[in-house]
Length: 470
Image (cartoon, rainbow, N blue to C red):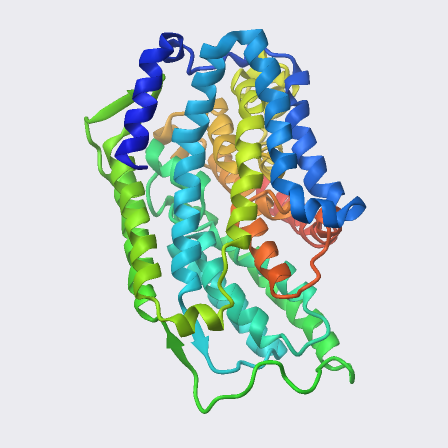
């Protein structure tokens, strides 16, 4: 975030003094009806590309803005400009702006790495790329690994008639399950790290579950891809990507910039600074500012030093990033009352969800923690959802890492694994979809993708529940 933005927001606090005391929204005072604009955003993403594809393609930003206004205007009239402004500032500074800055940096840096040469998308090669992506996801984040590998994978299969299953399994494995082993892998685990969960705790406790899910998905993918690959009409000639004498990288300097991104994100979690700016009731710490400014610099440096051949080879453009930015702006705004109602716990409209994760004797129901966290993470932002159930389970990291370790495992696994259930369950899902469609892959609709996830992932999650959480 720029210093100019901070000054502007600080000035807004002076002009609207009511903002400073209204940052925390009391979800117990809200009706479930306040969740309708959020539901409207989800339904628009799901239905409008099917019913009015051309209109959606040209006006999805306007539709997103309309739903945001459907929430903001009645909310301001009901609770006042101060409460509304504070909620918007919190969503922007604490969530949306850092989120978009990080995604933009990873999108730009990974988009500047072009794999020179023509990989041929055989079942073995495709499965190998998915396996590599699963490993990378826990160390450079699901978004970083997704942005690095999705373009080479699509290009390797651009002479195949059936490509959709390749991208769908890529989302399952690289964009979600692969990020379960370290706090760098997925935002909810990073939140847990900031709360005091050990850096290697997830690796120690989730490796078996993660390995099981990824292993089964890789085997299943190989079988499906082999079935299509053996069909006589599967491989089209000529291959749209010409062969070259050898493989290599254009824009390889961006690998170093990816490392800088990882260091900046890790630094923001490890560095404890007393310097905190209060902007309309939202605390903005110095480490977060340094991280975001550093990520902006990395983005600009990447654009400056990346050879044009790398961007041309990747057909790099800003359309996928613009789509994600506009859609998630509406999601982050309309989700404000939904998250507040969840945080209200048993005193809020979603009390039944909170009560469902506890047995009658007061002990945690780990199977329900897994499914409740996962189900909400499929449609809500999985980071605050993780935090809600983290606090519901007591919120003490030392207790959750020891006595209640099975509960924290269930919360962590649900938040990460079930982000793959929908396009909006995790940020890279929608980005991968947008890039694939930009490259000519006819991706499933919102519900079409859910048909894949229900058929493949839900049975896997039931097995995971039976083995580890019952």
